[in-house]
Image (tube, rainbow, N blue to C red; front, side, top):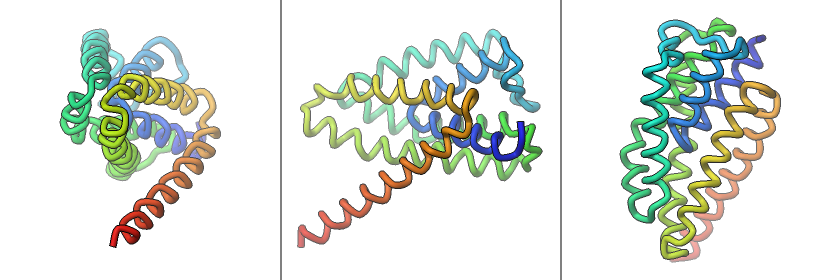
Length: 188
């Protein structure tokens, strides 16, 4: 894997961790354990250990359940304010051994990727809850889980598509930010 592909893989997997920390951790560990598509650098090979994979599976079930219940999902997002960026940092560093990237830089890039996605998710979710009375939360949560799953697979199998996804996400964030600024100015 060349440097650009390793970088895109890192961004894709880390971004997915911003939506759900355990889907990318579990998928990356499983794919690294059972295929040669992902080679984890030390000390992150621990993600391949059966006990770690089982623990991640249990944590995934817990997070998926908590994230589908209105108001509990906000508490879940609060707890995951540390977990998701940390998972993103770990995944970026773990998967960028082929790029021979400095571990500290990989950790920072992973925190930024997962943290920005998590921040966007955490700011949108209360609005979804308020507008729908919590009825839309399970559907939105399921959509986030599906997106996280697909992002991990794209990052591993088609990393060039991650560049497209990053562009779309950046455009959406800029438009969302401008809309919020416009609404804030209009309130005065």
